[in-house]
Length: 135
Image 1 (cartoon, rainbow, N blue to C red):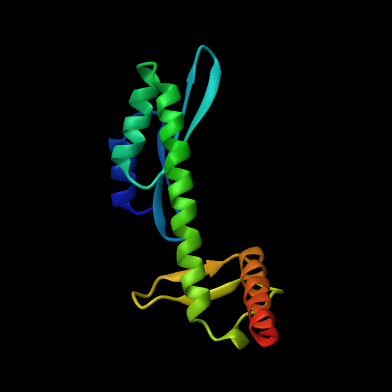
Image 2 (cartoon, rainbow, N blue to C red; image 1 turned 90 degrees about the vertical axis):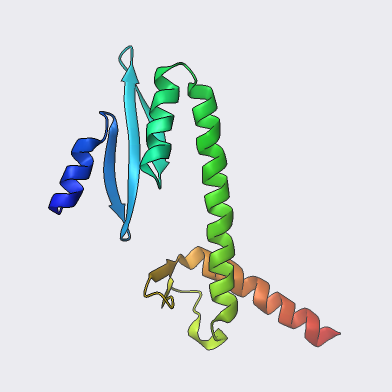
């Protein structure tokens, strides 16, 4: 970790730690109450992580868990839209159902689309082609 990450970690309250996933900083929130450990989620912003921790500490855990579920659902939907957009713009011969698809966006960000998602996309793509050829 660089000095700036160490400084950032030290500035966060107990129960929140920094994790770097695919070059993106994530904030992992874990805490305990009465000897029971709770994982409150992983967040993209420190503010959201701190808010989840505060909600938990003040007895609003169910609301926090609901927010986490909503955020994960939204992230999943946005990720799926991004993956589909990338695959729709890729040349079909570049895609393989046997491996993950890796590409680099215009801003230099590398994206790895899981093999299962590629397989699902290719299945939909070929089914659509078959339907069009039958018409």
